Image 1 (cartoon, rainbow, N blue to C red):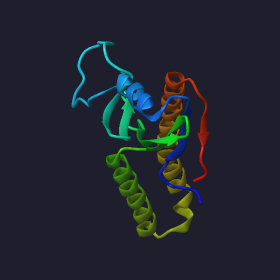
Image 2 (image 1 turned 30 degrees about the horizontal axis):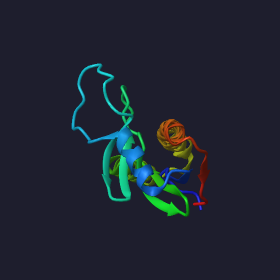
Image 3 (image 1 turned 30 degrees about the vertical axis):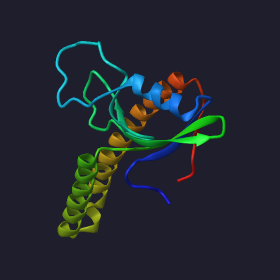
Image 4 (image 1 turned 45 degrees about the vertical axis):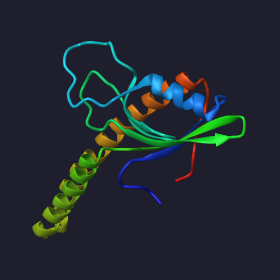
Length: 160
């Protein structure tokens, strides 16, 4: 099944034990700030919360991208190593915006009532789906790359 809202589940396997993996994660994650000012580069790679073996983080960027993925995951014991199981998803506000937009475009098309006008609605709907999805996937690729570098390992995508 194809998901309308982009999200991805993946794993990062590391040779670190769960406590060392949690410590490594704490080294690269700082508490979330409401606003970031200035051009200061004096910060960690990610911001968010780590509670026990669970975490919810997002990459710190110096530009605007509303489709920055939120990485929600857990550190799991894997014998003499550990696995970070992560689900990447957009912010809830963005999901609500997409749902509202899809409803508005669909309702507008149905109210218009003329099937010949569908060729105008579909490209608009397609554009407002493809651009945000591409922006989300671009940022997700960068986040995965940074995490893989920090944990010196490969990632494995899980089937959805």
